[in-house]
Image (cartoon, rainbow, N blue to C red; front, side, top):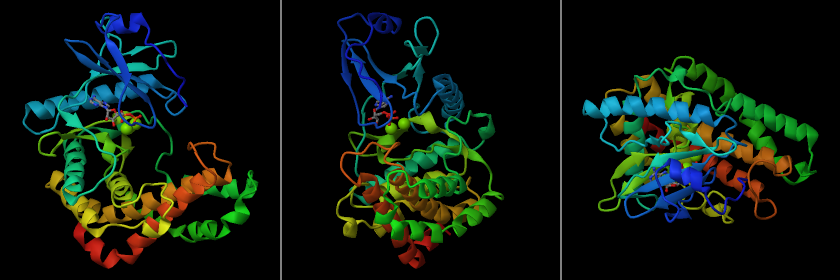
Length: 355
Ligand code: ADP
Ligand code: MG
Ligand code: MG
């Protein structure tokens, strides 16, 4: 967890041209960084304390974000990027980072937007997927491999299976006996590792947002259009199937990720349909036929992979994901696996939407 910061140091405020009477409050609903809104009568600014346990090299985040910002700026000038751009805000001295651990950075506040936490309507899902699709489209010609890999093996399914193997072998918390069935099921799906590797070998490497959750885009207050893709911390080289899959994973269930009502966890077909339409519209003319077809595997892989990660953390005694009740990670794992199974059950209806 990020250490509490009761008051922002006056010198940090001054570095962004704020006097000490500016108001500072915690803002938004992010789970990774600590996000503040600083405000006075003239300006608003987002200040984030980067979680250095997850991102040990904040400079790499800033470097990636600046390069993406530059690329999107050119696209916008050419009329090829219809969204607002998330901009890093430099200090007066030209630096982007502050604080003892160089873990504070500022972002220009994007006005007129709001983020939501749960997808309620197909229109919301469509707008989110269109936004992330437009973001991906504008970065399609960016040299993805020049981005820093801020977290190694983030979407490496084989690696996640190995971590599960280690957790099973160690059985550190003695919990294997409670979840043997779920473990066995995950293990039975291992063929997906090879399937994914073989498929990816023929796909172009792209800039992946890697955190395409609903609260990482902003809707316009007025008509619910998407106005910006935000939270670029995990942008790395990858494959678009991961971004589509993460949208499916986080938007399609009517229940929260840690629902205590697993029987109600399911893929809402109308939400899946809206996601597919929005993403493909955003990427129209750019996404290759092979990439379109890979999106279905992306949906399956993301549900399975995050399920495996929750299960691994449960077996390890809850070291990575914050837990607030007994078996919290086990419940999350079960819910992800339910989404995975429901994708399989609805494959005949849903997969053709991506063809
Ligand atoms: P985390 O990495 O912790 O998820 P985010 O970068 O997603 O942090 O920021 C958390 C929340 O703060 C977002 O969901 C959004 O509501 C709000 N937010 C972040 N950046 C901006 C911005 N530039 N303008 C307006 N709101 C923002
Ligand atoms: Mg976020
Ligand atoms: Mg983030």
